Image (cartoon, rainbow, N blue to C red; front, side, top):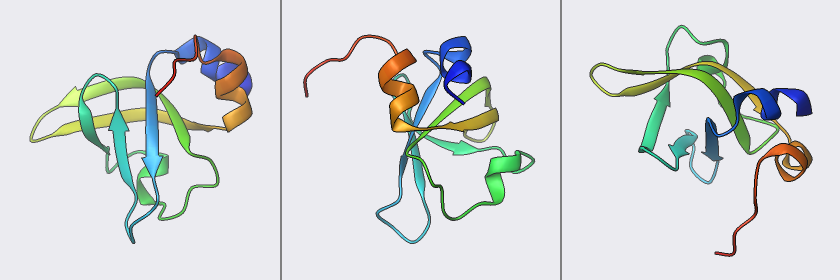
Length: 85
């Protein structure tokens, strides 16, 4: 899974699982949704906090397609430069 982070960086989505239904956010667009036809679009629990994606589509909202989960370690190793918050 780590190699996918390299190939698709900076197309990263942060997953917020603090609510009943998870929320998704990108640095460029803020709130996004997973495309309904996406394999990951029907999940309600994600074992990792990050997704990387290949395609972003804007219709009635901003939808992420072709996504895959990436672990924290994958993002640390291959996710670009770290910045303080």
